[in-house]
Amino acid sequence: MNNQEIIALNERYQFPLYARAPIALVRGQGCRVWDADGKEYLDFFASTVVTSLGHAHPRVTAAIVEQAGKILHVSNLHHSEPQAILARMLCERSFASRVFLCNSGAEANEAAIKLARKYGAEYGDGRFEILTMFGSFHGRTIATITATGQEKVRLGFQPLPEGFRYVAYNDLEAVRAAVTPRTIAIFLEPLQGEGGIVAADPVYLHALRQLCDEKGLLLIFDEVQTGCGRLGTLFGYQRSGVVPDIMTLAKGLGSGVPIGAMLANERTARAFTTGAHGTTFGGNALTCAAAVAVLESIEAEAILENCSKQGDYFRSRLSELVTRCSRVRGVRGDGLLIGLELDGPGADVVEKCRERGLLINCTAEKILRFSPPLIVTAEEIDRAVSIVAEALAT
Ligand SMILES: *Cc1c(COP(=O)(O)O)cnc(C)c1O
Image 1 (spheres, protein in one colour):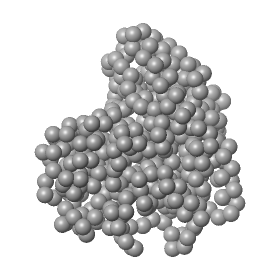
Image 2 (image 1 turned 30 degrees about the vertical axis):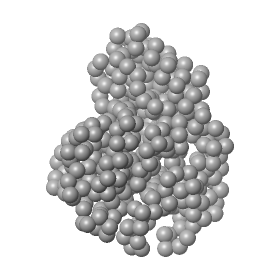
Image 3 (image 1 turned 180 degrees about the vertical axis):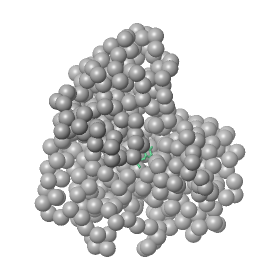
Image 4 (image 1 turned 135 degrees about the vertical axis):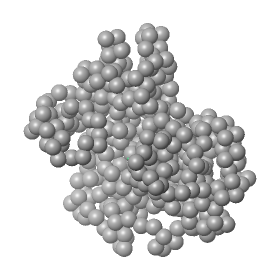
């Protein structure tokens, strides 16, 4: 099928939930993808910050093929080796001592919300309220749209669960003032991705940790987007050194296979006992084998070093556009999660870049988001920057 045929089928049979660009991607290799008409693109969106090691990464592909030939799925009523190995790897590399494996970011956050509530019920005098941030994004289930501090994702889905309140991001006084005797947790992204590539101030994060310790609150980091090497450290919290009690992962963890994880320290984790939560597909043998290969590759191929180095280079190249292009206001972000702030809506720039063979995305209306695979090279960055400059000039 060509682009047109695939698009026609999708438009006929699927809910029209996504504002899709008019191309169908059929193949990828590293940072490059091809559409059904054979046109090549540089994928600087990493298919929504997912393909952390690029498309068709040999080690990840081999792990998937090998596991598919053995066993695809093992019920969570039995044990599975890929799951056991992945859980150990995640704990050994983070603050956590327990992991719950699931299939997406929203599921990981649901699990975090449930763990916080259960912890409140068992060890926190029945406290249940969770403070989240304006501008945040935590997923599309009923609980995670409620946690998300954006009115637009909640419209039409009322009534929503109780027990969530929103405060301004990066505003310590606002959080302090919002804590009540019913509050059990503070839930935030260490860097807001969908919210427009807005980083939390490290001083603020340290103060949140202190506040949580003072008041007996749980600090929960949604690292669905910032985790798995994206910021140049394996986990985003390692940038500030502020350690959460619960952390969620998904997007880059499987570099393209659907997997999520919720991790917690021992004190918090004890609230989840047998039967408290569960999933059929979570911890699936195939996706776990892929995630193990992703973590192994990150270490074997010096991916974090590349992420930091190319991230610095990319930001410095984009900074040139601040002086060269009147529409560009500034550059922000960390590692390879980078935003280019425009003076107005950026949808036309995304389209012009696509026509010129570069896939990027625009978030929070005015922020062009760049999140290439962490294997990206300086040459690919140069090419992307020249396409962006051209798109901005027309
Ligand atoms: C993408 C994202 C989610 C939701 O993940 P899904 O896999 O789409 O459910 C949650 N939190 C953050 C920070 C995200 O970027």
